[in-house]
Length: 406
Image 1: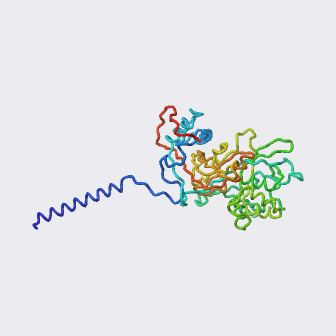
Image 2 (image 1 turned 90 degrees about the vertical axis):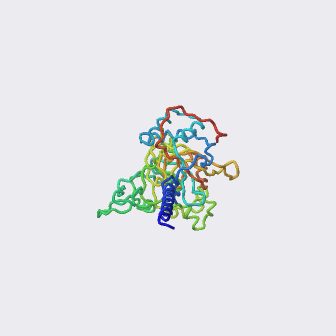
């Protein structure tokens, strides 16, 4: 082989290598789907991957959407969406579905579990019997935020405290120490005497009021007043249901609000020690009696079966959330029915932690309590993220019904 031939072979090899490198580089630079995180908000999915979306009753969530707009409508990502939503106050389900599909991107919440299933529960507005003054019957106080409660904000210095509720109090020697826990607050020393808002007739009902975060109190003259969450003592929430399971007092599959209440009634001497296992303590304030529903953490009234309490570390407050789970059915002997619904993340809760963990607001009265007390099924969540780059069309809402709506 002469020198010229050798040079030609080398040249062809270099060209081939260059073409291969070019193709490889194009593949690397081209669009590729990032693997979903182990825990958090996954990449966008198609609407066909959102279970039950095409048959959903999205129009029923419009009130919750407009309430989110009351708080977020002035922000860049929500302004155009809310301006258009307010023009169409009562869309059909098909119109609402079309609106959401053209203005949001669905993203599956993932937690590393099979099928990304998490725990979905419910909460409600309880009705308690109470008084403005203590009596032999009404002897369990509901406290307002005490004057010595310090709200400590150190996030700018200690990033690990970001999003945490840090509370404390100042001692006589000017030391800041953790605030009183539940056992200390309810001890005979009564460190919060003088901060009573109301008194109620049941220690158990008061405890569950703390968990729900808001409630109604019926006074002796028949007047019903509303109370809502005002602050908390800074301790993490501990589930007494989990404690009863760990002690072997209740089987895991049987734990619910009714069974916990029954256990407490049957063990009166153990009520206080068990409740003190949860050091978290909530302080309340009076709420406007004419207000339509309790206020969530977003600052808007909650909508029954459309408002969701979430972990804001994973789901931004105000965002739409498509949830799919099963609800207990009172008319079918303890059976369940499929529940797929558009909700809005408008609240938070001390027990709500993780990307696929949520609490559905079920309303007030007996129906709300019945459902919330028995709701604890697994389920999946899809967050709908505003499509920031969409351009308002200025057209009327459109969309034809696609199958029956539930």
